[in-house]
Image 1: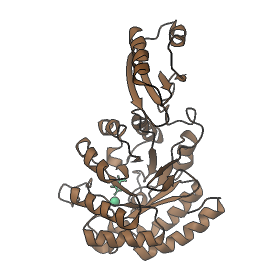
Image 2 (image 1 turned 180 degrees about the horizontal axis):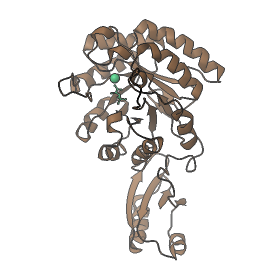
Image 3 (image 1 turned 60 degrees about the horizontal axis):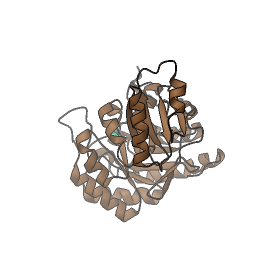
Image 4 (image 1 turned 90 degrees about the horizontal axis):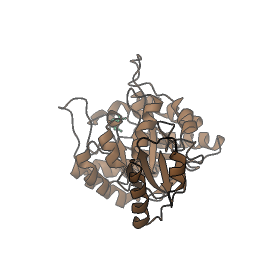
Length: 337
Ligand code: PEP
Ligand code: MN
């Protein structure tokens, strides 16, 4: 059962409610969000649960959890989640474009690419400082040095930055530099990490796991929401199938489905979704047509020399060209870019 209190509830009132709930033999977990204060209650409810609940003060709403992703569901919140980060509105009419290289490889190259994607119309910068590589011998990222370069790029361009957080230990340092924290595909079900991210005061972009169902993806988002962080972005990035021509199979049907099931903003990453730069522009157009609230696109000034994901990275010039086509698609469906 979830009990929703107003965000302005005082510590004394919460303690009073907790005491009463514990008196019924129930256990209570609290989480404070910006829009509401939530108590997750569990235990044996018994037949007189209705009377028990009615006796508890300061509660705005009681929800009998019937859904594995209750807080993420449209039933819980019919209107779309819209929030702002670094002057960019996420989940609104504008399709938000995140762009930048797979990894921050060095200061000079990153700042040049950041300027170029800004000129091309990007709203948010990306770049991995901590990289989840399939081989331990591949480039693992510049770590804190990479975070500092991202922060410099933000000051230079005025654009917010998103970067991946790999484990619980690095949440604090990544949150100190980044505007949005990314959970990569490989970590989608790292529940310990998700719970930790539920307690940072920054938005989280959660990629769909390589082999995750839509329901599993939404339940992963629920972990973050249920700890009090209401700013979660879902990101479809392709799933593993029998197809080998593309790196992954971009599941665009996940966009209307996730938007129907959940109020959370849904982004699409056609770079990882296809692994081929030539597929990125057509899939971005299709993603907008399918209702995506945002796109995540890898851009590199010299893809052949990229330390990771070169084959799926657009040159800055191609990125700008693509943005012109995307504007037209967005207009047709009543959105803008
Ligand atoms: C990335 O965004 O560079 C990345 C590693 O993504 P994913 O987790 O989708 O593979
Ligand atoms: Mn990448």
